[in-house]
Image (cartoon, rainbow, N blue to C red; front, top):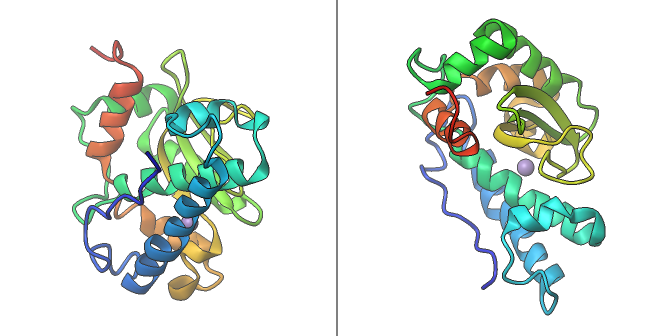
Length: 209
Ligand code: MN
């Protein structure tokens, strides 16, 4: 079964004014659709057909550039739509495990926000900023170039991404032009902390009981 472009969980205009409808429509309907189609073409007739995307990415160095770029693009955007919400933003509520883990590993939400925003702002060219959890249930911030992500065996720092921000120009240029820091700041108004804490809990079933 081929990979499918997931439906957006909200309307194109739902994240306005932070992310505009035109950007969302092109980003989902053209960019993400393109990665999905190109991934399917790249794996057609190979042993990768039918594998989980996470398992493909874990050994991505064994496959060609088309699998790395489009497999990453497929996975990263599928996560990105889910970790935003028109009802999101602000800080995770204190009883969420992710709030406790952020305080534990960064000292405060403000420290986390600073570190994540700096990772997103300083990623040169195209790429992503990530909040991840490692195999010892410790959170860390990292960034990756192009459509790479921390699930890939080629990543500098490996872990399970639970929050990601697309800093390709296609993600913000129509509304923010060259003002990437304004886009990063606006992203904090739409983060779906309920989804992030769910992903954190799924990655660490024994954590923060
Ligand atoms: Mn993108």
